[in-house]
Image (cartoon, one colour):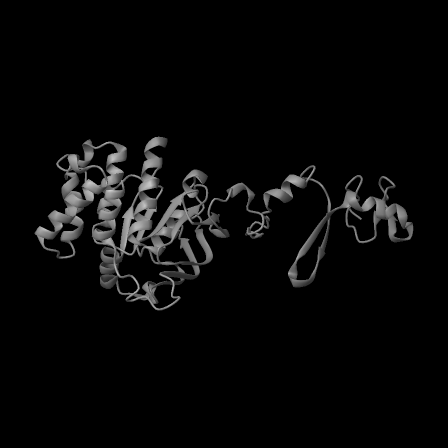
Length: 343
């Protein structure tokens, strides 16, 4: 594969720094909101809730979250397929949320490559024509398009299937052709939405290794949405989404169930609070009562009220008796630590 790797670099590598100012991110989102307006009796849905994040040139990033967390909406906003309801998306310091539609179409063709879960190939066109057509829209000469298409299909390991209709390719083959199509115009950003969702595990591993190799050897930035922690494990960084909120940004090789040091605690519109796993694991039962203190720098200290009973016994002057069960309680408590009765 090293031969192919060298070929990738010669074929696609661009001088990405020419138009890139020092320390300027490739993509920057500032306070992005997106609302899907409901019709008639259907309520509106807030899919993204004030997201701010950055993508650097050469990043390999996974957007991780369950179905309905806002992953696809985020990718569509970043890729210029959808304008956010509020906020700004900067691509190399240009606000694409304010770009006229005609210029935005050119931006999508030239700067962004898309790989979708279904592949989204034109079923009645061959693998060759699916890749070739994406360059034709940019006015590239046929001779160059033919050469590049054949090289990309060979690179993806499907050159021998170039004349086969897309509808007759296997799931893995369709995704490889879709990746070739996404790379055809040498974009700076590749966006992949659940690219391994419709293939078996072995094929998904091969695709992910291919993504990683392309990222490393071409300098293209990769942004992949997934619900799988296995897929996220291939990324250099992960953005964790839940209900349209960015819960945390995490580094490479991190177990997403143990992200307690970087995950934010958020209260949603239903007044529910998300807590890190290690906090929940320390709770003997979810109905436990806690003493809450606000410390400096807006930090919150949660202490199980059961842990205060020894202090209560030592200093009875600082206690009050529950009128229901007679237990001694801290003066600051609002509920009895024994029976839960409200004072």
